Length: 533
Image (cartoon, rainbow, N blue to C red):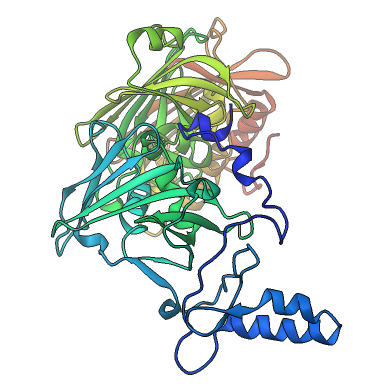
């Protein structure tokens, strides 16, 4: 099926272009407008110069046959071809077809085989532009930019050339059975009608347009969207991205998948959004399920906020029936995404079966609750249906700002530290260790080592039996955080990190050895070892 047929356009006949490949073919004969006062037209000068060259070469007869007097006394083409349309033609040289202005347009009727009407829902005001829609498609998200071209392109329309007046054979221009017929109606009752035919075989940037039986050349770019079916104007944007001043907080995202034994649940961390202790490596959302973990800013944004501005790779069907959704695997979705925002809105995305688009793209059938559209979403864009928990976590274990620590208890073997601190920054913070005064900088450096510990691999298994080899408990002065981090050695090379008794990460056991070494030298002047990898 051709692209035109897929879009609902009439198939273009090759016969309409037959015999129009060469300069002397039986192409439509153009009509020349009289030149502006004050001299010959640019085309006339070009032709006379060309004729002089031909005469000098002994081709005088040919030159004479190419030249004849037009109605206005100027030389014009009569060879059966169009005259060259100059790209730099001034507006004064062009032919006005429609003087109606876009801001007074009330409707545009377009017939490409299946007629539809673009109409003005609300008129323009000093504060806002006019709003247009398509009759019987108001429930669908429409592309406002594309609709605006239908309103503006045909208004204040100019042609570059009159090709034939009262055309006797409109089929030569593809206008016996036009690609589209358009009726534009304005506030004062004025009606402008035109038909769109073939692209000119001699000038590909121009299209034949019929107005009141006369055939003109009009820029093809202006006529393009009048040849589209109504479905073309449906937006492929699933959910518009809000403006910055009304952008809501995404409070939570829950991902339910058939291929996972657990949900992935992400939550906005209000208490941590102003905390810069992690140096910008952690997002304002955290993973709560299947394990609590900080998220990577770069890796998690498409998952937490990617529903806003989400664009489908194709629109599979408008107004799908229950049978259509079932055939796409959406009666029992493979993946369900629920996003809740602080403005009270909750959104649901559903992903069905995988399929291959015509261009080879592997995509999921997708449905967005509240719309009447069956979408296609590429696997690359459908991150919720393909991601794993470890793909978006930052692997940060300790993310608390050092000067916000109220208590930090660290136990390893027979060594035990109980830090207690108050203050707002390095100059005001006062800390004690096991009840005795402690040098603030020594404490900060020790805690800096804890911040360097990160999960190397997400761990979803069970905790080893017995007590942890290292146990750490931390609380903050503002009361926002109170958590434990325990380390269990699995073998000589690996250990498991549990956050609040939930196994979360697997790391190299050298981390435990380095931590215990730093504890052993805390009360000395020996420098801490800051790397454990």
